[in-house]
Amino acid sequence: MPAATALRSISPKVQVRCTSAVRVKQRDRLAAAETLREVKGQCPEDIDIQKVQCGDFHGHLGEYVDWHTNIFWKKWFVACKQDLLFITYNCDHGEKELEAEMVSALLATLRSKV
Image (cartoon, rainbow, N blue to C red; front, side):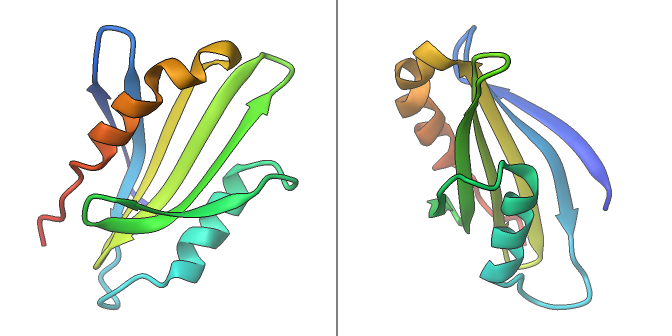
């Protein structure tokens, strides 16, 4: 899987990181089961996974707090046609609501180039 890192800043403090993007050429569309499997592999076992839409992309989201570091994490695996994105966001546990609206607004702008 080719890895790339793209960082989009919403404000001086808010950043959403797309840590990998891959184009799957052997078929036309990625199944929802694939994004679910990928997000489960990146998150603790005991969390709820949600279906999400981010602009043109659909997939799954896991969110949790790493209590060892007191960091709140959101991890998305979303796909559109042949494109698969792994997106992460984190902040101090007590600050997650401060930036939630900005993060959602940024992800709503995701568009497929295919």
